[in-house]
Image (cartoon, rainbow, N blue to C red):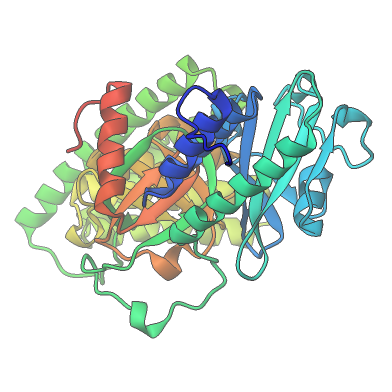
Length: 440
């Protein structure tokens, strides 16, 4: 008669595998999967490093979205083209690749900031989807080559992760937005997950609001009393802008941003330029109104710069003056059409000093920039705004609509539009865990 055995708890590896299966069987927010799956696989395979890569963009890029063992800053930053490095080759061939000396492998791809040379024992396993690869699981340790049973187990665990990633609905930004997904502002129910590159860590939730500028206004005649009010408001706007930009420059100095923040001195110089102030005051005195007067000053400077031999410095200064004039309009007279809701997630193609002076007054909880956002100035402005931020989000304005609620995960570089209740609950738990208090 055959022997029967119930495999109760006590086998560390088996217990960990069964716990993983139970964990992965539950519907969960993508960020929970990205955090927990690497941690659990690391324990199962007794490897201090486990990374979870996801296929993104045009389907040719692998991005590290989950990890234990490396610094959190690696998330969203470590990227590989499929076919490059052992991980890229594993995904290209849809076969596991392992070695007990990664640096000696012909396909080894070194990332300077990871310090992964400490973990030469390496295993990369592709995660398969219905029609191709979804990503890869990579485990690393100091010594002790991975055995065949380890490779087989990791392949099986990767298959379980595959279902979780598909359930999370990572959206290919190239896909046309279907008519059925059209939504009115603030009324959307379709959940969409977009990815970008982490700039500042942290997590937040809020209504999406596009960055905006004052609307152009036609010249209009003003009464004498209106002119006097405008002159007073203009002087006040100049004073507030001057005080604010000096405070921002001081903050940049304390943050030791150095040359990266040198453009702020240009704004200090512009606000201290008597001719600039006098020309704006002169036009306001003629009764043109503050928006029209400042708009004319900006156009005059732009025309002057264009009439001279192309000088990059003058062209940049003209753009800075235009940016500053927009800020002065908002400080002096305001524009309801350009005002932002309080504590929103701001989305846009780029940032400018206008956003430090004006948009920041609405106390945004996070910033999301499209793949058009580039340059060192944008990076400096994001550091000065000091809120969770991701950049390089492809297809942002294809899917994002003003008023939609979204969850920004700056730790993993993810934006979830119309998050589920479980994702909101997960964020609340995260806030309590890190001591940030309840959501507003």
